[in-house]
Image (cartoon, rainbow, N blue to C red; front, side, top):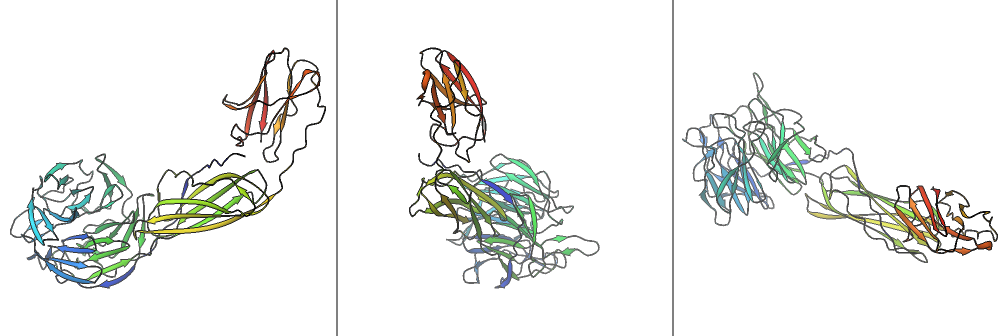
Length: 533
């Protein structure tokens, strides 16, 4: 019996997902603020600039840093110019703040500020090509992206800053011009969410590698001044405003977007409804910072809340079929893995082993990876091994799979077991000592059906016309060679007997279907049809 050839099939099935965050109140920000930049760098969250009402009269340059490990705030070097209507992003250990509405400036700015947390200092960089405020900012692959905003008109402009050369380039415009939108990165895409005016629920995703925008499933409700963060392969959106008439609505809802299914789920709301807030995710925790309500330009909040999402989790089940098998026949083991947690699992590594005892099991390796390396929340993936065994008794198989939780950055392992009872091998009766001889030159099958499950053998009787060498080959119906049969048993009267057990050259069972037995040589060239089932 030859060594195992493992066959792996990866299949993904989607089921429901919607795990709620558990909300708690964390230390208040020293300075209440709205329309400010919120940037996470390591385990620290920076709140930068913004305003505190009433009437936009108090434009802020203050910078405060929240240490998520100690639940404390500290004051940092202020923005060189107090500015509101800003967002920010970090790359390479530096925080970047673009544009906005500087105090006493008039319309809007093209300034790009860079903050170094190590030296606690700010430096001006190359200005944006397009001055604007109320734009959104994201970082991906070492670049800073500034998208949308307003400079008297709602903008669809996309501009990208490369810190390594201190220069800007322009990307493909966003399909929908908008200000006060939420933006975040998940996977290899940047998501633009909501905004206005008018107020949108539309969502568009930008792929920097192709410079192409695509439309995604809309938010459940339209809103502006919401904020978003990416965590564990998903996108979370919190808060925002819908400018109703006569009274605007301020939201506490939290939505989660699954890029793998292009669907939204509603999560438990944050305790405090607000707009013009900051949202960042660190690991499996979503932090909502500041913001306000009542009206645009009204007093700001310093209230901060943290929503902790349950860590990732997986479940698995192993099935071995058939559960009762004859030794030497083929066995299939199927491992089903389900992501039962909130976040995307990555780097799934399955393996299969057997408590052998007196059993001899062909080497079992890990299946070939499936088409996607990710397992989104609520999805199921299967892995299948096919192998053969010898010996008798009960074989207990154990399958394990490890997966990496993208949010909590931990590796998880689950295991499951199944057993198969191996009965004695079916012994095929020898061919009759004097099978029916052919009455004339030619070839014939003793039967034209071969059963793999019963371990059948099909006999081909050959009566050559002359003494030239005879070959017998098995082909598929499409003409692919499966096996060359080289062993011929002599019979009386110059006839020969050739047997085939339904296996290939490397002793693997063939698939069910129609095959052709071709007998050539000895003055013959004859094709016989055979059905394998």
